[in-house]
Length: 355
Image (cartoon, rainbow, N blue to C red; front, side):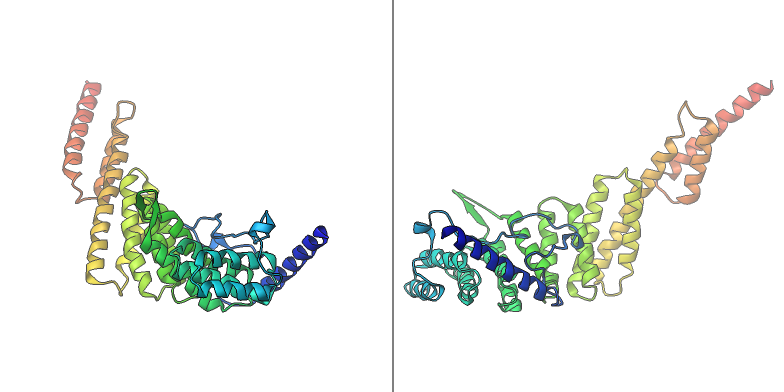
């Protein structure tokens, strides 16, 4: 009997999942449903694997007599849970609502129970992280039956609360940056067309900066600008991306390709007519600094030929080429002096050879 019951549960769950996935696939601006592959490769800078991104379907827990529902059917269980909420027994209500979803996952009451569970976590128990995960579960496994737009916003609000509250562990309080970022990522993946999506992406990029990962922040800022080019957040992203790119450039000054890429990016950024005067001045300053770094790299490249193992002529050619390209460089005076010295040595050697 127990085996038959388990078989029926799995069959019903899989059937419901396939129906939900088929419906979600036809909805524009809606994230993937159960059984549908997540397009995380479309969001560079995001984590690709996490419980926030790919929650597992709930199943009845072990020790059913203790963890299972207290009532015989979903309707009675929902009524019982509602009475617990009225009595403000929120922790117990969460447990019973969760048991309902696990025991009767394809019942109409399961959708209401899952939302009530998430709402309690957000509004009454200060468990914003759990609330965010429960809303994401609702979006994934009940996307056809719930108000997708409303639940997406609820999940976003939960992520916002996570960020504001931080996290306490024993006697210590910290920002919980990684979990907060993943909560935002989960929402963007499921509701990329939502009004809050540009703000969410901006927050994700800033959190990447807080994690000391400017290269990933750049990816998110760039993606934000590409996806929402006309948004105010895109302008903010442009300025912050410039700052991150310069941070990376200063940390890797010997990377000529990165230097050229950064200079080209800054040229394009400076040309944006929507930039504020303050933002443009900041980017112009970055461009000046990037060119100085580029000149330093070019100078070191020219010096490479000024060695005993190389001919003086190759060194002279390298220095002359540098002066043509960077006539106003702060290295120009040093190079001119060195050129005179090399040419003098070259002239003396020629005279000795002729004699």
